[in-house]
Amino acid sequence: MAGLLGDLADLVLPAPCAGCGAERVPLRYGVCAACAAGLEALRPFRRPPEPVSFGLPTCVAVGAYEGALRGALLAYKEKGRHRLARPLGSLLAVAVARIAPRSVPVTLVPVPSTAAASRERHGDHMLRLAAHTVRRLRGAGWQAEISPQLEALPRPDSTSLSVAGRRAAAEDSLRIRRARIGVRRRAEPRKGTLVVVDDIVTTGATLAAVTRRLEEAKMQVDGVAVLAATQLRGTSGSGFAGFPPDGTEKVNVGLSVSRTRGDAGASAR
Image 1 (tube, rainbow, N blue to C red):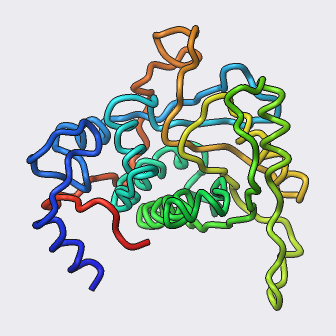
Image 2: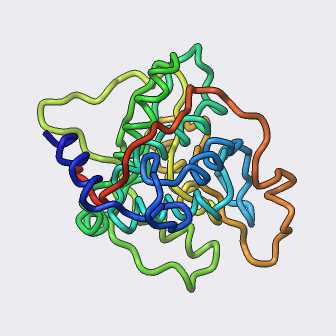
Image 3: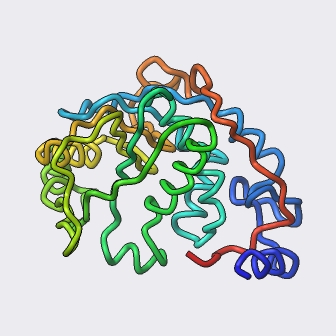
């Protein structure tokens, strides 16, 4: 029923392209053909944080935080375009595949949203995104699962904080989820690859804090996969740490963005 209602809404309430804002154009999961082609052409690249955040493992980004990727991510995260979780989750799978070998199980730990942010966005946007990433990875032959190990507490605005201040604030706001009553935690360490997933990396302070919290709980993080990497003011315009914004080698996980008749905006979580 939810899918039928979404299709009907596409016909009645067509939305602009989430990538470029073009109106009255055919959309493919929320973006026009040109933006879809641009997203599918992105190549993942390793992205060291700027400046370097102590404790951050290998970080792979799908693309630079610009253009169609930025538009689609903002539309999904801040404007209720929840159908974008599917194509964005597929893109994130490409970054995960750069870190996790297909031959061993991979566990994704999404960076959590605070309770207030989840209410405002009608759900945890990264948990939903990670679910689509896992589906894409499984379809391409990976043994993948999600493990929401962390919960986020409210924290002060970090825009005026130094890198060290952001790191401390991020670490103080994270804690390991308590085991639910009647559910035993695993006594043995997880086998395979453990990858932290998030939407955007800037300084890497939050991702480094997540890594430390998990490692305090005896969970070894093998890498971080994100959709987009920002470029801080004053850094080189040629790319990130020697990698061009359009990336390097592409990893094939069967990514394709199927055609739909439009996108009605927010859909059921």
